[in-house]
Image 1: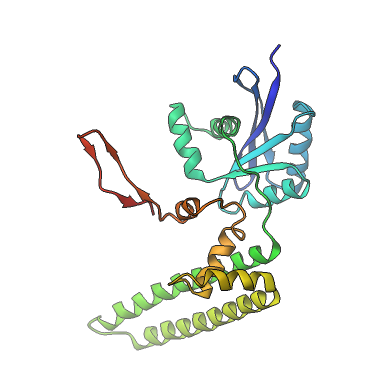
Image 2: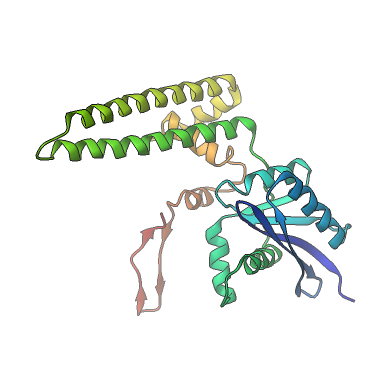
Amino acid sequence: MSKVVKQVAGIDVAQKELVVTLGHLLDDFSIELFAYKVFKNSDSGFKTLVEWTEKQTDNSIAVRYVMEATGVYHQKFAYYLSTNKLEVSIVLPNKISNYMRTLELKTITDKSCSQAIAQFGLERRLDIWFKPKVVYKELQQLTRERDQIVQERSIIKNQIHAEIVEAKPNQKSMERMQARIRFLNSQEKEIKEDINSLVNENPDLKQIINRVTTIPGVGELTAVIVLAETNGFELIRNKSQLSSYAGLDVKEKQSGTSVKGKPRISK
């Protein structure tokens, strides 16, 4: 009789629901997907999902909950699982979509996505996800807020430029746009002050930032953004992985004499 060696709950996350497929890997390397159910993406849904999973699986083997990063909709459930000391893996969406292409699925549904995620989790050796330290989470929120302000300010500046080159610029429109830029500048200043306060309150974090800023061209704000987005390099194992995560790794396509693509940066 075949023995279960690995168990995975593949979860397709949406705004309001969690679509779950349970699967296990047997000692003969065969994969079985054996249960499917939909739950609410809420605190009560999380509890029900975990209870259902425990009833359906072998309690002597840990279940790995695998989901793809879906905006912010997966975060609350991931925090719930990590807080309750359950194994979680979060996979980038492009890895799941590329994997699904190899399965040659003719119909893409929430169920088939959760099945693919479960199968992916059973076939691959995935890192366990741990919830970020509070300071990194706060820095991530602040740096992303600042990024939105910078983008919005750039849009308004382009609108001002377009208004200036108009045949007859509207002075009141110009004044309103200039007022919005001043407001955004003041908000960016407040965010930078909040970031500095957090850094100064954490000597260990400040020490790491001082090390990172010794790299030519890397300023304090860039260092903070990198640390916030990588949770202090928690899951980064080497420099190649970091450059790939940032989308700055070089891709080269070459095979034989007839296939030769131009090397390019993946970003």
